Length: 410
Image 1 (cartoon, one colour):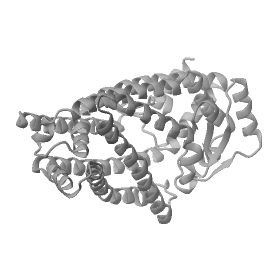
Image 2 (image 1 turned 90 degrees about the horizontal axis):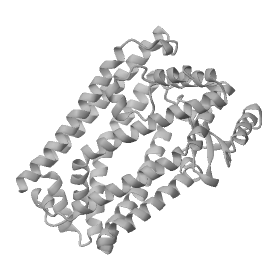
Image 3 (image 1 turned 30 degrees about the vertical axis):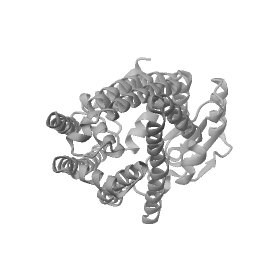
Image 4 (image 1 turned 180 degrees about the vertical axis):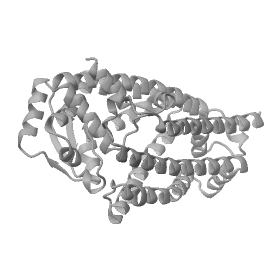
């Protein structure tokens, strides 16, 4: 039985990773396909060749990084490295919570050290050479420190809470964990702009003027209450552009990248915001929250079942239940289910994007919406010819050519 479980974990891990490599390879090969006619004006010949070179460099870096992580995890599984670390933390600490924190903390540190070199090269070599990077070494270091601290506080806190509920509430684990995690998720969503964004960026109120008047008029016309309209200093890190709405109810905020204001005309910006209002009008935010709640409930239920089966620990030679190592095995075996969930959420998300594009096109104009999509694609170096399988599995937004085709049919 132990050998069967051991083999199952290894096979699931290898199959899922190889499948992911194959899909990514197909997507990289598709970049050489003919660009659809309706987006051929996004890049001229020179800029398109630049885009190809840029994406090829990032693709090679991602592939090297992914293969390295794959081999490290596979070696640790086959050699007993994970189980040895788990047994060491069991022997070292009397507290099951310290066992978990030390185990996951060591793995997180190893992953961070492994990935930091790739991040530095991507930021200060690739992004720098292609004119995107505005990040200084000081900002880069500060961002990493803040990200690590947030991961420790929020991620570590959630991890210990879930383990505490498992150790304390037994059969009520599922109910208590679900309620607490959902409350934390909603609080983060509501406080994202006020608490988390300012940790990394400076937000300033949008100056009075024609753009602000148009945004307020659009929101009023659609009976969409916006608490604040902020401009974020994204240009201190990158030339790429974006905009987003955050929160719900009385906590709705609009955040515009300063690069977006710089590179888009007012009607194009307005169409982007109308698109986001369309999501709210169609209850996409509430639908996403509901779907996240269902997904969380399923994950916690499967985790509960997994934790009650000691065979998985025994198969890898771990002395008793180790919560941290159980999460590693659980995440591997969950791979196929996560893929199915990702497929379903991506399908629903792409449908919602088409509806939001329709809303933006009819509230501002079709031309403004198309112009905004093309500017976003050009400035963010978007892939104009993604492979259909990669789109089906991973794209939360339809390819830009498909979106423009749908807009033309309005």
